[in-house]
Image (cartoon, rainbow, N blue to C red; front, side, top):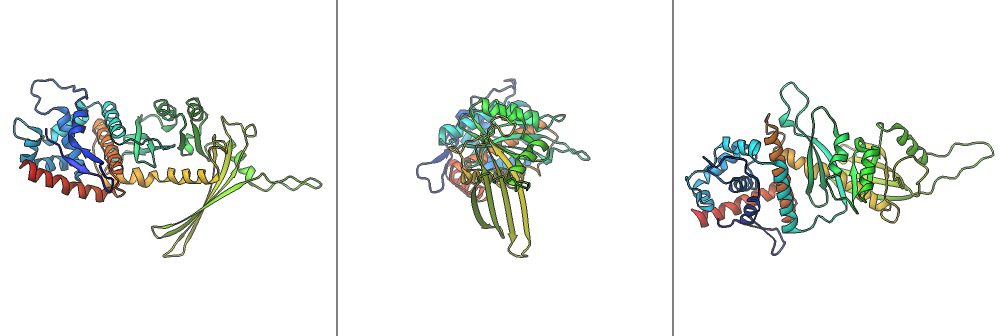
Length: 391
């Protein structure tokens, strides 16, 4: 096939070559019988990626996008029967034919080998329920636990959390499939578990976690270090030495100030695997339109020694971790309409999530900060090439 080329934004020489991706997808296992097979698995998935980059999200929208460009796509992919896939073919391939883990691995390797990177230290672990998969009258749908390089927009790995389980046992299992040497793993308070921390440490990584009500003893132990020592007649106890870092941020109609207070060299003082430092993070936000304020204080712990992470570094990592809501979840939920894509097919939902992760990562690698804007640009560039090269 000939190639569709998408240029990066302000990154000279960096492009997305659709033909190269299609050749990589040739390595997928095709479980279909050769009899009656109309489309190769690689060409079909390549067409779906093209549609997703152009703004088509749901299976029906993908089908229509392909159908309206049928003459050009027939030439581009040398489709023998002169037609593009129907919606049932798209659904069946994503649900029953493609092996999701294999597809995720190939797409992940493609991004790494084509564009490099994936060298940032912070690995964010976070779970998300695909709301479009929740049956009417029920509360549970497909729930995925993801390992994400927040600063690069790259998903390293995602696994499904089984319906009768929660994220806690899935956490160490996900970590075991990652390479964590020299990495710092951040996760919410649910994952502040001994088994989780031990797996990170076993691989030569460090953790950055929050201490809340699910670990009451640990939470209380950390809090007391930041409280004034009790007054006893004839006895004076000095405060623990602390360092601080402060950040101010203005955006989205809010003025926000974060202050992180850090106490180091706590190994042996708190009964927790690998603990080196603890911190208190205070967030103060003011709505610029109404003047209303919000204050929040949370406590955390890390196995990073002071030589690896001081107060400012931990504050930056904490902000990067919270950015997963906008960097990954919002883009998947809203821009890529993941929550609005209603399906009872688990395999289809997981395949769409894998493709969403790939689109988000590719857009970041091509230098675009705004996913919606990037897709509008891609739609125009793809249309131009289909029109002038293949009609």
